[in-house]
Amino acid sequence: MTALLAWAFAVAAGALVTVQAGANAELKRGFGEPVPALIVNYLFGLSVVVAYFLAMRISWPSFEKMGAVPWWAWFGGLAGSAYGVAAILLAGRLGAATLMALVLTGQLVASVILDHFGWVGFEVHQASIGRIFGCLLMLAGLACISVF
Image 1 (cartoon, rainbow, N blue to C red):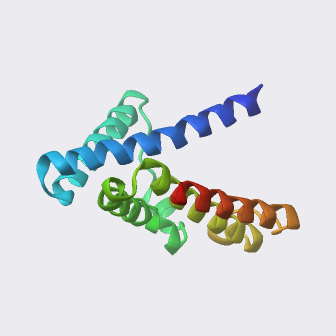
Image 2: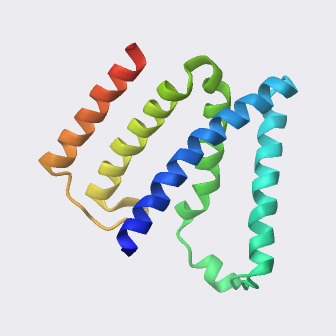
């Protein structure tokens, strides 16, 4: 049951990524510029995270703990920002289905590579024939979505 809830939560989070792209694109249209729309998006998101942080009385990590984190772990926010910029600039042009198919294809292929080599903190999971075939199927799905 726990695995089923985890899967459902992951699917819901994926759906919200699509909603986020559409909402940000609408902010961009309304504001006339992408950067103010992204700032509003990230400030609103940050305020929710800070409210949760305060409500749950979570303690801030020590400088020692923060210093022990690998250098590359600090780039998660940069990656999220890159996605935000790409989505806000491309959502209106590509449409939700093509944009998300491209994003998901990039995520899937990158995740198989990261798993295979155990990069950025992931446990090693070999790029088996099944996983590679899944990537090829994703590419076929991308082609179908973007063409039709």
